[in-house]
Image 1 (cartoon, helix red, strand yellow):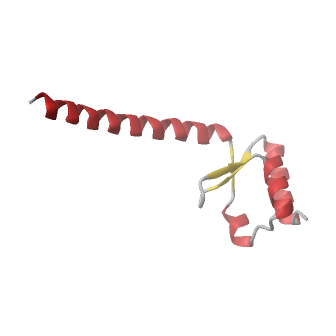
Image 2 (image 1 turned 180 degrees about the horizontal axis):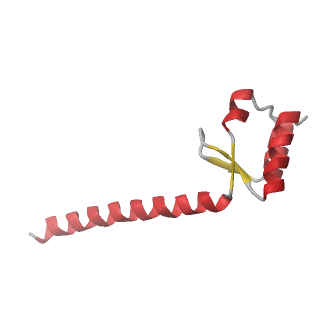
Image 3 (image 1 turned 30 degrees about the vertical axis):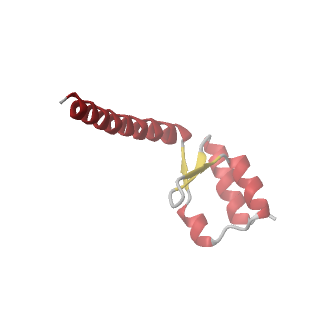
Length: 87
């Protein structure tokens, strides 16, 4: 059974048109998925207090920024390797 506090958090996220973000695990839940998952698994108070109601576009944007950073590092490494073997 979904605890009342968990239901209220999910309902508030749904009302705002947002999702639930767990920063400790860097995981996003739609309000519906959150209710479904925690209907079967009881979340503790620490977990619930750490949840953030955020727009999922923030997660998409952060993911693209991270990919850009990784791509730049990979390109720099690739260039270093190519320069090394040109000698």
